[in-house]
Length: 143
Image (cartoon, rainbow, N blue to C red):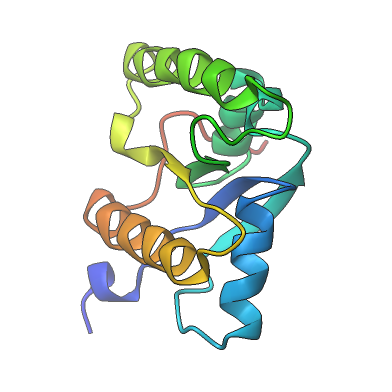
């Protein structure tokens, strides 16, 4: 088995409490198979995810970060996902400036009824991260 096949990317997933977190729960209770690479963190709204959270996750060893929220127009906080989309679009530019591949960051819109879609988002993200290998650019160096 090659090193690439052994490598399993670590993903931090910031999930909207109202939709995407419930979608991940639905995937679990429906026994939909998907990689266990994502560590979910439930947030009140995708709009509450600071770019600093994303950079911190990468600095602490994540190979990729997923932010997932309600579909555009369905936010429980009216415009939170519009804010997230605008704010997090800039994250890709910031990551590129830091020398981190923009493919290490992903956004998705998953409703509470879309367990299968959540599973597919995680599966595709894992498959896209594998060829990139471990994220080393922002990782904190241990003394």
